[in-house]
Image 1 (cartoon, helix red, strand yellow):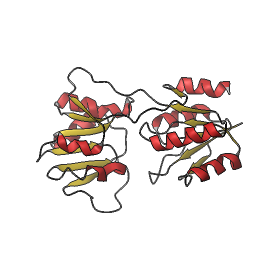
Image 2 (cartoon, helix red, strand yellow):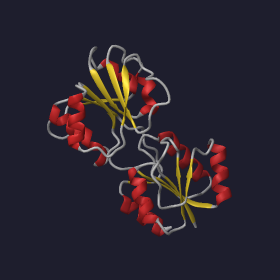
Image 3 (cartoon, one colour):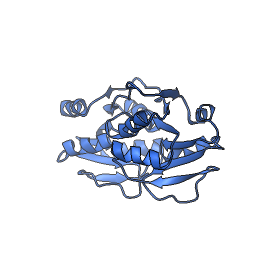
Length: 240
């Protein structure tokens, strides 16, 4: 039995460590130029569409798929779940719970990046914790200074009217984030509700500095099998 682990997150890394030594192959999209190595055989790069993914499952002899991609990688998750169902391949998504506000948090939920401009006043400094993939969807934030943090150096100039890339590789402590927000005079924080303790440090920093947060809501969840913890995912693998 060969299991395909769709990776690219901290949860996937912890799963890979728990699954080391088993017949598991990991796959990462390759969005980061030099991803840290996983303790499993790993393929890097997209599959090339639905048909190519179906062919890969057959050619490699994949018996089950464990999806530990980012909670906002909904297109990959939906496509994978649909193809696995059609090919009668067991599929499970590991989806960590989203964040909920603590006392003192000032969060406003939005459904899309384009809605941010309706909440953030002109002249504000905005820190995007949403990654570079959706950066151009914030193009209507003209008149604000936009900071986008990413792991790799940029391939070109900043695509928005006024702003900058900030290079940094997580994890970041609460103290790191507080110092950064103070130094950059951040007025607003925009994030996806990714969940997890490691990424919450920027929210804790915003709470302490009383910085308002725009929280992008999660994509709709399908009816495929899903668990919230790594232990549950390992139990699913054990039961196959």
